[in-house]
Length: 116
Image (cartoon, rainbow, N blue to C red; front, side, top):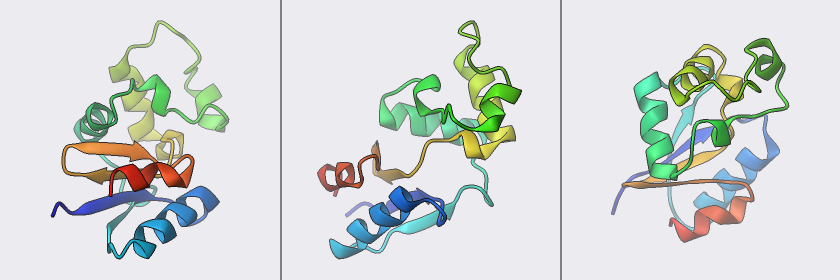
């Protein structure tokens, strides 16, 4: 069975609910505190591929860093958006749960059940 990994922010209620849901399924995931242990640009690109979404779709648009990095500019490519996420990991939508070659966003937390 593939290892389950959660990119987790303990201060986020959705992230906590998702982690609890995973544990209730009898799974002990690897927990990555991505605000402390920021994923590299390559790691974020890999997560996007597993999620099947664009970098823009993984952005938290309500964060101050979204405005600071002028991320509403639609001419920015994925590389520029990923670079902003590396510089300001709060921009990364959470939680991301990975198992094997697939990943889902835990919004809502029940999304992870299809992965498990």
